[in-house]
Image (cartoon, rainbow, N blue to C red):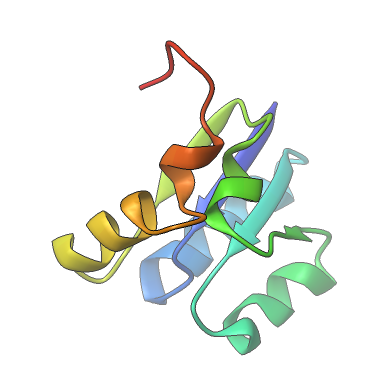
Length: 89
């Protein structure tokens, strides 16, 4: 299963780490590249954009700090919505 994870704060980093520990195919994205380093060292992949992250994913987990950030991640140019194919919600 290709799990894609956006938002690596206190909660998000722990959740993503657990998925990696259970040997899922995890790719991450975060505003701060530094927050992703421990996860990359554990085997996560990195995505350069929300669109790239969404393309070909089986599941996307978004753990933003606010509803405003969540909307931005989804709707911005190059965001998650641009990477989804028809019929996905």
